[in-house]
Length: 223
Image (cartoon, rainbow, N blue to C red; front, top):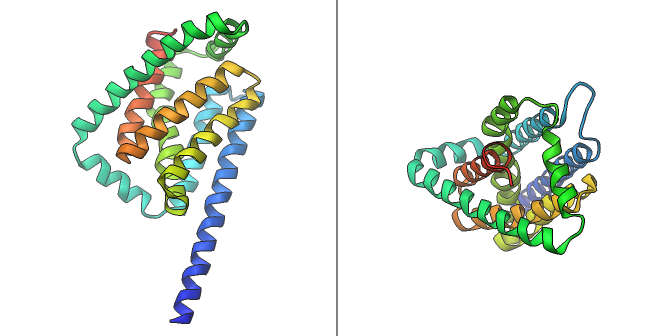
């Protein structure tokens, strides 16, 4: 019994260290992305897609049950989850529309900050950006930040603690951009999608929400 207990403690510590290492990896990659915005021949969008693919792969390797959880999530009430994701995306878009109007009145730097965010599309083909958002960046960010990190943190610090920590890290990595409006936007998104995941614990709902919101706000109806 004592040996079994010690083995469980060792396994728990090892799992905790692995999770911490993945959090550091994700944060480091995104800090570099928002600091430099370009990596050799890779522009911002290719680099973001690469970061998400890398961290997702590490996450799946570290959490062997994650693929099975995603499969179960996809097989259960998919239409309802897609609907919830779409509704939440338009709610978030409405929040951003109202927030933009308020920010332009309150902050003198708001207009340039917002323009800088949309400037990330400069030189990148709209079709390519849309495809990357739809197929990898939108769903991938939720697979990484909420489905993997928030879920696994929840097993160690509780669902409320995981929500706070994930939203905080998600906002903090954007500070390296030097764009206050981007940091505020990330904070709002982190809280919104973190709450969405806390309530439903469905990567599918979050992935649909993030992807639909990103396509609308960056491609279809920029603010």
